[in-house]
Image 1 (cartoon, rainbow, N blue to C red):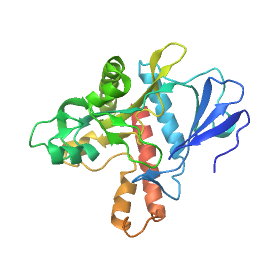
Image 2 (image 1 turned 90 degrees about the horizontal axis):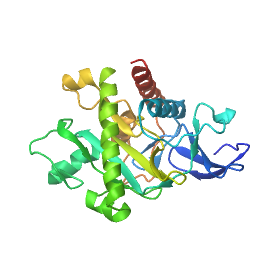
Image 3 (image 1 turned 180 degrees about the vertical axis):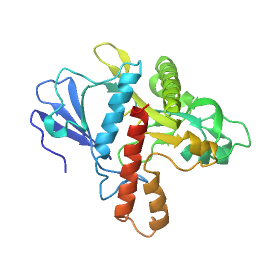
Image 4 (image 1 turned 30 degrees about the vertical axis):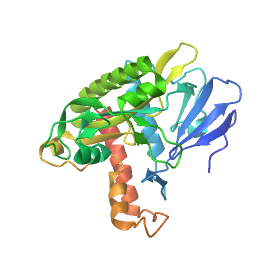
Length: 284
């Protein structure tokens, strides 16, 4: 259940985030990261304690590190009741594109590559294995699906059809540039940024492409320990992979429409992974 916040009207809840519009400043929106956790397009229970705080902390940290316009606003204070989990942001005209960048072969990208030798129309060398580093980072966009549906991997040509050549070129360049900067910072902390996704919109006041939503968090990105990767471990990541693995072994989706409740140890281990990632990056 969403929290009532004085001066803000709840307008939308996604799998993790709740959005509120300002009742006094129509150009502002409050983005609140909840402690909800989702996997396989389902919201699970129980929640992961402090998850929203970790996501917001990392997003703010990355906004400060990246030389890219972002949607945060300092014109109004974040309400006290969501101080650790909320950000006051400018409303943007959002692109219907998730800007995915992959530097390593993993996740759904590996499945596509295994089936076709390509990811989103990008041809890759033969013989790559799960977790291998790609010759260079690639832009593999997705079309943002409505709540409850799967996002659809699309080609760059389809991006052009949806938002035009100039915007498509700009989103690809900005996404790859951010990924390069973030990868270098992560490596200094002993981490590998395997892949991530960004969302952008147009600032209606400046007409400038602006970075939005969560950025380089464990919900939107796949981080690995560099030392573990070099030793051959390609599966241990700093995110909710623990949850996915447990569900894959304990939930027959064909037989049971609703996912089982997560055990306490899975909740604790997942919280620890989020906390460890924040500490590792900020300690660098």
